[in-house]
Length: 460
Ligand SMILES: [Zn+2]
Image 1 (cartoon, rainbow, N blue to C red):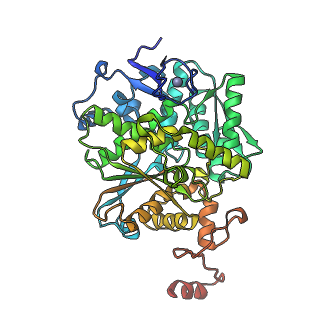
Image 2 (image 1 turned 60 degrees about the horizontal axis):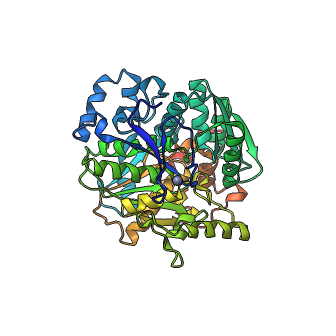
Image 3 (image 1 turned 30 degrees about the horizontal axis):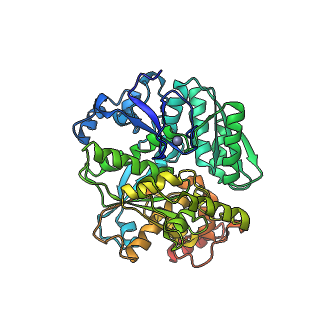
């Protein structure tokens, strides 16, 4: 039995079934929709104001106060401290970046980058993984699994190694950046390369989970998203608890946008923020299912208080199958055509008056080069947030004087091939990026001889 005032609830407004916090579920057993973790807030020791969380900094010698997730634990209080599995996640940085502001057309001082690449496994996934593993430990799970484009498997493998659980990872064939695969292998995960893409892996891992009673940590796991909520708390903290005008994040499986919307909805309900920021979710044009459903005149899909045209999503997925339409983008972390959190993302877009855009690989890679050039660096998918911001400023949707936070989801070293490919022009033939590479920084070949080297250095 749960000893916390928290429970799981089906997000289908016509179902609303509730389940104990100790149950292991990735969908409502009654209707198949996604579940949320919900709280009886009145029974929890909530802060009067967000700045009260600062008190945990004074005791950061304690692992849970050091963690950038658990030092906000009053807002995700589903499990007793003794079960929590922490790796010091969430020591991330909200960095003002005027160089990138300039690039996207925003005024100086108005653009911040939330660099989640500083997490232990190098991506935002650790925020969610610490929460999912804490739940897994609470329910006594011993074997954890996921389907992954790379970052989830790296994070899972790391937390499983720390928690002494067996890690089982499904990745697609040829669809994983080497930095990420290297991590999964090094942390000892049993890694299975399925002959298919991410969406195939996701379908198979759900079947395997059921057949073998594994603990699934993909973002269909509602506890994952509880951890990912805290990215927004750290953004607010980085802005001295002021609410920005915009949060812009890449859109793949849509777990982040879903978690961010849930967090802001909760903070507003609890009276801890005066208003919610707007949310922009950025697809790659090579994997733009959300963009298609939200923006194409045929669908114009909106959450509509939970009574949305869910059949439009099924029809889109059927169309993909029938026409053999496969996602294809250099931003492999968002190369996802059937996002598992579609329903929750639509809800987040409603909570945050959100917009959706898709940007081509060329824009993503140019934005990525700018993020790198100004000292942070990120993997390709992360830069979709910057490329999307540029587009939205050009469209006049984001004002030049509005305060924008772009979420950089993963570390620059996650996908070195993409980075070197951009700068040298030698892309993986599968991932040709057309167009100019205005920020390419080519290495210069030079003779093994001092005079030639001096000449090369002085010649700009
Ligand atoms: Zn249900």
